[in-house]
Image (cartoon, rainbow over all chains, first blue to last red; front, top):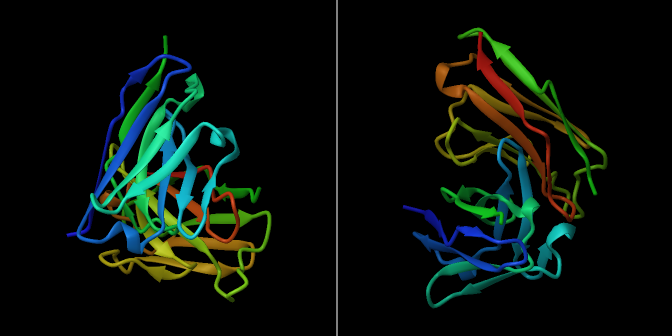
Length: 112
Length: 112
């Protein structure tokens, strides 16, 4: 069964850092583009980043977030630094640029 | 950025009746490969998003055939032929033809 399992969400102070993980099973991450999408409390979906041949980021996270992957662990990462209150959200990883498979999400709260 | 505009934002529907959601993009979603990259997602209460339709009209595996997608260029529609209780949730369109990827605001479907 194809699955994605995110982890790493936490409460962090403004300006802090966090690394989210997305462990894949049932398929090989290196064979697909992979994406991160977030959802602020009570809000809609916001695309954050996609890594395929190239890596793309939404403007609000450029220079602060970095998407990477460890093919040996079949895992995708989102390294987040310089966190702001507006980064508070549930973060989902999704397979491919067309997002055909989603994880259950991990919650990031940025607050002092 | 490509702006995705959905209407209506709230859609009360009687069980067994049809429902229709419109999604309009500010730019054509026809990519250079000739495909049109417009996808539809469903998010049931308390759940992660799930892709229903990809590239305008292709149903994902396991999606009931009461869901259908249509449209071209900049105007797209998601139709539910007969709404069932399990269809309650928020529906999002998303464009995959341009960077950054963008979602519509979401349409909340509820039972009257």
